[in-house]
Length: 352
Image (cartoon, rainbow, N blue to C red; front, side, top):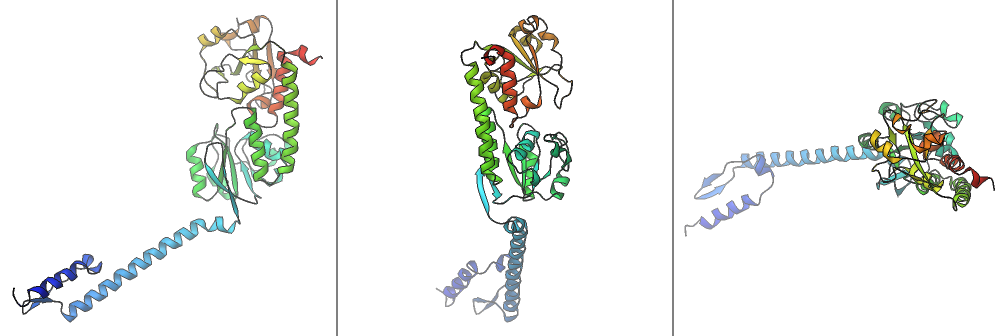
């Protein structure tokens, strides 16, 4: 072995295990008597380069930390939070005290007022028209096209949306601005009651929500008791005539029809509000037709679709017009719709 061969290997090994600056600023070696050394000037340069890398890394980390702090600052300043699961299966973190709410669906607006928190509603949609006070609330657009800019400007702590009318991308945009988003999607009357109960808890209106739910449950039980011994009526629910839309398997209206003493002829059709063909409507042969009309819809949908004109329902005069707000909004007034539908389908059951 040469005299300095061992030392040379040692220097090479040290370079392999040296600082990250080596990768960024490789420096040449000087060979003295067979040994590779670094000159003083090169060592000084290397130390400065290494110091620069350290400062750069610390600076970048500082910027990252500042960015994280800014992103979460609004939520930290809002006070303590609670976590819950919404109807979309999402884990949602909401403030324990909520003073500013925006509703993006008429049924959710009605629930907020019904549980006694209407004075905290700072924004809703152009379709939110009940109760009367809801008309005076700042509008952030319609149900399908709400304005993100207007929502952010109103500084809500919570935005209420319905999966039947809101887009997933829009929900993600709100969450990116640290605005809590709660999704409701009831598929039956118990689901509507759950929405009322959940909002009562979130808005710290538990007592008022409980009283409301007890009243709604009692009225529902009275209807079910009255029609229990009746023969179920085959019902077609006409959401719109042209094009023809109806209530499908996932619609809470299908559950209302059953509780009112009927059976929807489209109960097994996939979806909540499916489009229905004229041929299928003609073949369904319903004994009764429900036309949701006269509420927010005005006189729209007040005529039976052409495909149903020869159905037993039309032939025997079993076509019933019911306030559409009571049937298409899964809120407290859905029980009004249940009562109206049950009395239409089984009038004799309510004479006793």
